[in-house]
Image (cartoon, rainbow over all chains, first blue to last red; front, side):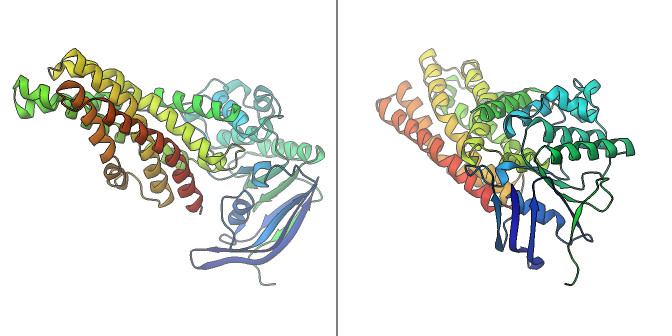
Length: 201
Length: 222
């Protein structure tokens, strides 16, 4: 599988965010997207997920299920965590697992993997910011999709949870997935390629 | 199909949990219907004559009440982003959300209407006619409201814009709903024609609503 982008141009309001952006990501690769605030990291991830319309350019996916669009094969992990405070941790996860696709690990195992198994019955409204983020990560495991689009995945996570996330990402890459992650910090994975936004060419 | 069933169950569960507001609509309906006799006075004949219209206007206002959160809640917490990346067509997803909304907010109004009809001195036959027209007509209110809810999200204007957008579009539903009820109670027009038109309006809104709402959401992509 190869995700490639050609000549992407993104305009928000009247401001040109980025232009003529080319990159590609292959199976088993992690592309770290870096750049200052406002450089378009989130816009790039959202445009791949089909949530932002690009002014120009095209995104292609080779060697993948031709029946599905790129967005339908991608997980988007954004700043807003899509959790309902009145549903329990397990109910939130089970819903997204059923809605977003099948073939992932069992929700209970996904909760185990992010260390939330003991809180499964707790309403999500009582979770801390870091726990909410971990629950979002569990969603990536509970519904299998090969492309992960992660926006600041390590924000609000403590050191142990960051190590656990690195482990989860490593396993996803080894299992035939690919990851694009916008980040300011270190993701803790070797062999990471980087895409720098917001600098003069 | 499984994804849509999951969405239906989730939305209905959210509506009946704390803060979901499913019963607030019924309470509001009760208050509106109770206030009218206090305003117009204890003239039983007058109340019986305007009763169907009061029940319909009360149901219309009550069904608007929770419409604001139909899509805005999912937009605010990022759920709408994930629903957009789902494999189910967006038209069906918003239709399922509207269905869950109707079951949890409008169906209780239909069930409460006969009891409130007694407050307004309606005959049993009249109560049956109003309840039947509400059962057939309220899905149209929800699915027209769905368009308004999607526009409010796409235009990033919440709350107050919604009733102003939606109420004018619901006037035909109100006219034919009340006309059918009155036809059943006082005649001389037969019940059939206005009721059939009401049914047709509902069927039309069931088709147009989800397409228009999905188009509004797609257009409003940031």
